[in-house]
Amino acid sequence: MTRRSFLATSGLAGVAPLTNRTGRVSAARPDPFELGVASGDPAPDGVVLWTRLAPRPLADDGLGGMPGGDVTVEWQVAEDQRFARVVRSGRSITRRADGGSVHVEVNGLRPGAEYFYRFKAAGHLSPIGRTRTAPAPGVAAPFTFAAASCAYYEHGYFTAYRRMADQHPDLMIHVGDYIYEDSAGDDEPVKIVRRHAGGTCLTLADFRRRHAQYRTDPDLQAAHAMAPWAVTLDDHEVENNWAGSHSGKPDIPGFAARKRAAFRAYYENMPLRRPALQPNGRLRLTRRIPWGSLTNVHMLDTRQFRSDQPCEDGLRTGCDERMDSKRVMVGAAELRWLNDGLRSSRATWNVLAQQVFLAQRDHRLGPGLEMALDGWDGYAADRARLISGLMASGARNPVVLTGDVHVAHANDLLTDFDDPDSARVGVELVTTSISSDGDGYNDPVSNAAIRTENPHIAYIDQRRGYVLCKADATQMRAEFHTLPYISRKGAPDSVSAVFTIADGARSLGRTT
Ligand SMILES: [Fe+2]
Image (cartoon, rainbow, N blue to C red; front, side, top):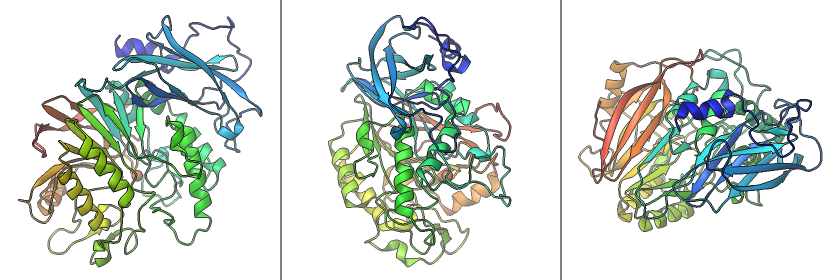
């Protein structure tokens, strides 16, 4: 099947009811599938299917126009997009307490296979989603995945999500800032292209409505409908620069309740497995997604367990506290979990999907250091522990995926960033934003100066886009995809840089 034929029959082009048990589709009742469909966390035998019923997505109470009481949602998984070969089906109940969300953990599927899924509720059929299962353990199937972060709705269109979908990847990895909790004021330096409904998210209703608004975006719906996603959050799903139990703004009370609301809304709106939302209201986002014998994707959480940022949050010079060995980014328990997984991993590629900049970056050109303390530079001792664990584990080919900074980077990771000749640990691919900070720019002169200051940084680009990686047994090809604008719809996609990481090299090799 070509991508075009799938798009033509998916919800993107308006889905026709292909098989319908009742033999009719109600036109009288509003469509509850305004937020589209999604799938996630693929395993060799199954995947999570998601939808959220919201006939009125922007309803003030965050409930999307859901009626009271139980609503039955039927689901089907088929081998073909016409649903002639349905292999799994069932029903799920959702209610207002779930925010109308549906999470179906399907199993009994074949490994390494493509499937199509859809839902039915209130006399309506949902758009059709495409998904796939992971290859069987031991199978070294080639693997294509895309990485994205930072989609500020007000700053631009989500064309980059659409272009990711156009690539037809096996897996989409989102490393955070899927929504933004705040809304632009009149003094915003970036052009406001479209408006959030509501101001700053504080309550469960606010967060539910914000997620619903994002999910009405057709480009985002297309990206979810094309492939399974693996997601982890960063700060803006809750509040700018929050850290563990600490609000980013110490003067705002009620942070614990706000975080709990944000976590709940995040779970409700993501294709996560049910244990991701724990009974204590926390999220469990650390998990592994093995892709046969070729790749192990280790999903990290660098927000929930970290110490507060040192010396406040921004760019700082002369902050000795950032070196304090007691301060943690992920902490002992998560590091133990990661190291155990790295040691036992037999995968050719070990992808660490995480949020904030891992490599050292000196923002001051010339003498002296200036560092962004919300990233790993603010947690230097925990970074040293992470890197020594990576080296000691013997895990092959570490590839770190990062978001947050709204600028694409390709970095070599070193055992000592102040010594360019120190041992290579692996590579870091930093995906730029989908839309945050608007159209962006590319300034080769200033980028060259930054790279002279930081020789382990091989590439920088301030435009919008995403990273696409194609892995096989001998190499990983990392393409940086760039859009010329997002303040208007429909921008084309071009590849602005390609790095070919050879098996065993632990280092970037520039191709174009
Ligand atoms: Fe961001």
